Length: 420
Ligand code: NIG
Ligand code: FE
Image (cartoon, rainbow, N blue to C red):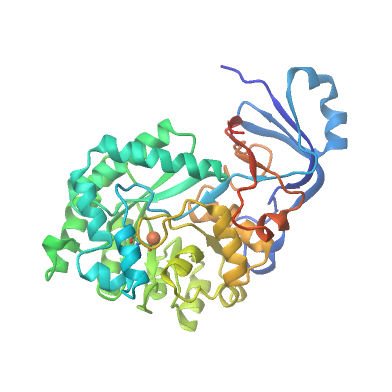
């Protein structure tokens, strides 16, 4: 079916994020947003066909105006669709009981070590049907979309056995086909040592390496592999073994690194050549230097820090060291039950002292780089997927300045209006 072209005009700021620089952006590159004041975009067949000022575009397209759907964006801005590069969005149930326990003083790791946390959600995953998980996740994806997210990464890790890890990954594959939000899947069988392997974590690591990774790869269910490298979860040595095994099977490593305690996570990320290291609340100066040297992207999750009552990651030190930064919701039922990338963008500024421009780059182009999809999304450039958001603010700073409000007016996914 051929779609009518869409012609967006009079955009107060068209925030293209376009740049000659290839690959993830660092330091002051993160502030270069490629803004066109009074901008305009022509979309055809789901692809961005042309970009310019409204004046230039009228010269080029006036003769074709009749065939297009015209959108007047006076007083509003357009950005690339937001990209969330780190979520645990496929889950069943919720954990408000643990929230209450934490408000009364228990720590996240206390709860997990006592059989709650990831273990509680794993018990749910093992009992609920694939259909149930599918439907709950689809509703969450609707909310992501309404808040401007057009692509997200999704991790397994609530099955912790072959059958249920595959169940979670198959839900992602089905939702990727069915739902407008694109889902980039990550296998995270090493999210926790399951209860039946307590006291024998190496046997579980063997299971992940020998059975789960080959099965996941055989079915083509994941692009990335991740591990929770943390005190009382997986050691740096176990993490490295798992990531190297994934790599040998063609999966690209990511790592939950130095989240609750400094645990050599950044070091492992650099050593295995991970595409990104996540969290980094407790990363050391040496860890930051290693990430910079190895070109690992830091994926920072300020909503998680806020929710756990932890000090946020040192974004300024990380950016100043030349590490490219992406930001993410970490959407999960324990440490960050939110679907809001706009909130995360606010928090990146408020808690981590990133500038609005850096935050927007981290939520679009650099996030795309953390998923290795920057050739098709993450910026508004000719030939890229027409994943765009129209925001009801007249400059990009205002997106970050006014918080707790959903400024989304319209979302287009592959050139189709899906919100608004
Ligand atoms: O990234 N840290 C490990 N995993 C998640 C939390 C998962 C959960 O609590 O269910 C995180 O914070
Ligand atoms: Fe996470």
